[in-house]
Length: 111
Image: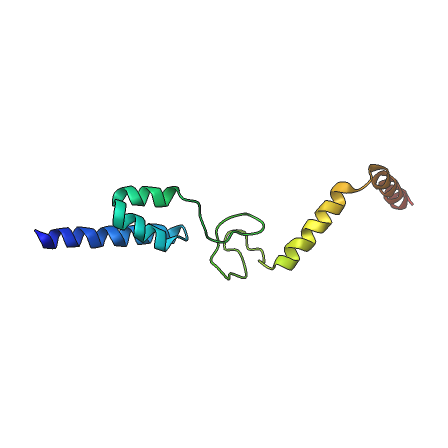
């Protein structure tokens, strides 16, 4: 009888650790499974994901990844900040300046 209890308890720990590892919380998954059993598995699944996120697609990536496996973009923070500055500059651009540039471009095309 005691062997059955130990077998179930170890299986519970393995499942809790595996679920926690999927969420970047292996230690918490083990502890919750140890004390709460299958209820700990559910709590671990409901906890927020601690894994790093891609700058562009916001999907979970492995820690230290150079390229996102979902969107294929580089995970260099400098490149990401540079694209944000360009986007912000385009968003704040004066509509009159944009209209004048478009008119000049159309004039050059007709020549």
